[in-house]
Image 1 (tube, rainbow, N blue to C red):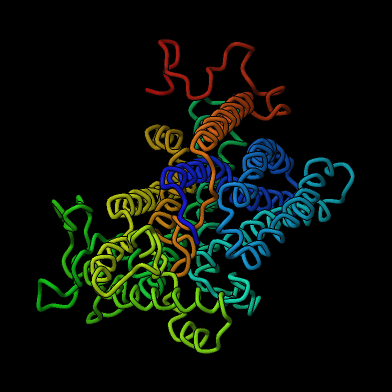
Image 2 (cartoon, rainbow, N blue to C red; image 1 turned 45 degrees about the vertical axis):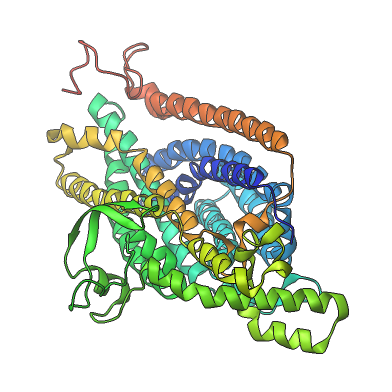
Length: 544
């Protein structure tokens, strides 16, 4: 494969990262709000109390705003695989395209149909019928995420496919192996429940604002209580499933788990005790391959990651050394593949099959070969090339380490916040704790931030691979002029920033207005309500 201009690769990565991060601002809230709405409507159907119908309709309005803009920001991402990542699409399109196609059908047919019925079917469907539609909307939204994460799971741990030396593509071998990949299933549950945390804090924070302002008190109190209970259960589940994902990365992506933990040397390198410390704080230095400073808890990391006290967690330096023979074998595999492409010789095919599993590591060496041609690798220059390529298996440790730590620290913060919120809500003492209410308001964006850093951890930790172990990222991009990439990057940034501005405007507007039916009976006179999240003035003492 010819190498792409490194500037084009970097710009392609930056553009996809920005569009994905923009899109992911809306996804977790969509995933979480659907099941919260279903829970509220369930209580309405069971009890018949109109307040729960009002709650469902009000929070459904905010959900609808978020869903519409989320769809708009997600459309372009699938096209980017063809425009900016054509080599990737060629290499794995047969496998990767299948879950994306199913997700598209599910999102635009099942999910969109049920959302329409949910919004416009209140007076046309029976109570149980409308409740069923709401649950189907929640199921459709989360199943849509499932297929995206199945596609991503293939990138993290490719299963269900094999390389065809004739077509030079990955070909399907098992749809079931693709769908039931351990990485895909674990990440789907973790991501969906992280969305539940996001939706819970969104509802709880806005409800806390109403309680502080003494508006819509019944709706706010009931919404706050349901969100707090939903949130504490979801947060504990997220923490538990995060441990399962860490264990999976230890087994499948050892470079990622070592980067997450800032582990340059094997876990038993500096101590006779096998259990390594778990670092709370460190300053990883990728240039020196060491940590400038460390603060950790002794003997915690090994049992946390390996679920044992005596297994070794491979350090990044040792993994570089272990990668060297795989790179040498990968060079042999690519040489044999090139020879087979010319003469279709059975001996060349047999040689390729012998080293096939290391083919991706051969690609890592290509950028360091003379004229970027592996045919020019000789016994004299191979050692230097392999040594340089070995360093490339290490992801950006500083980014991966701190992305994970920010996500993790926020997760434990949510456990404490939801626990106190649920306790004081269930004991009817919320209004006696204005600090907790204010903290809930200002914490609304934090779960989205945690989700963003979780995505960065997963994707930055996978580097240098676009398909782990098979296709390096620098081989996957399209060959575009740098000017084209700069122009499209600026265009996407402006477009997506407009979407975010529209989302924030509409969310603030409708959250500030509150439920219309309730406003007509209990809202203050026009002009009496302070803007949502406004800075307290002299006349507003509820924040003090």
